[in-house]
Image (tube, rainbow, N blue to C red):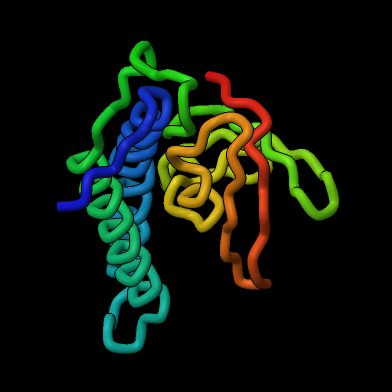
Length: 156
């Protein structure tokens, strides 16, 4: 069983999504199935087929989220350090070729959001930065080749 590390906030968001799907979406799809069933012959009822398919997809999504919750380990943020790069650290890096600087927060896969500057620790860049200290160079193989980054700063 692969453990998924996440923040308390990420864990709470997953619980909220499961609750929403179970209390809002599930009854809505059940109503659609009942309405389609009331229209008669199910063998040629496209609405019924579509509603049953939507129900199957919803139940699969709920099961996946519950599985993620079951494997989740909430990180004690009070024990984080900035000695070397680890999950939940904010890392400022500089591309050694073009000197461009970027700042990313390393998070679990389920919390990754590039627009918010959050990258998953299981991405090539995330993996390449883990364990590095300020001033160290990380050579990271990405689909377009190898990129070299210097770790400029690590913060929480």
